[in-house]
Image (cartoon, rainbow, N blue to C red; front, top):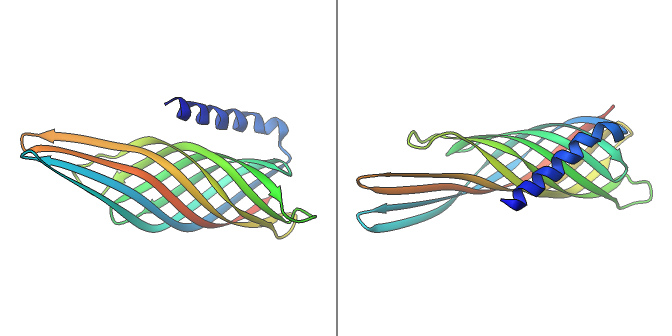
Length: 191
């Protein structure tokens, strides 16, 4: 829990201080592919069965933030995903460090940290919807098309905390969403 608290505190502190240092604000969107890793464990009549499975589907994102300078940006993201098992809505706060790969900083490699909250709504009636803490990181390449427009391709990994346990006279069930991985293509507009 200490790691989660430290990551969340660092992201929040950076986001709160952003308006005093802000140089360029931006809004944007992204579309991509999301893979969720689920685990289930059932115990019935003394017999335990475990299963690990992955669900894959499209992911859609809207975001807004600011470039603090040429090498630092902070932003918030709303993300939506619906696969065969559940629907997810995420609210994330992120920080990226940008490393210029050319003389004019048109092409940048970015690496950063993310923390936030995800609302998971499983389609199964016996499983409840839940808000959970998520944290992770992202990396990718950003290309500055013009002073106002940029595009990027990225990869994000999120550690999920969705964990549900239930039991009755017949046995017990434990179900969890372990992690989420996203690959996305985004476009941002600076103003």
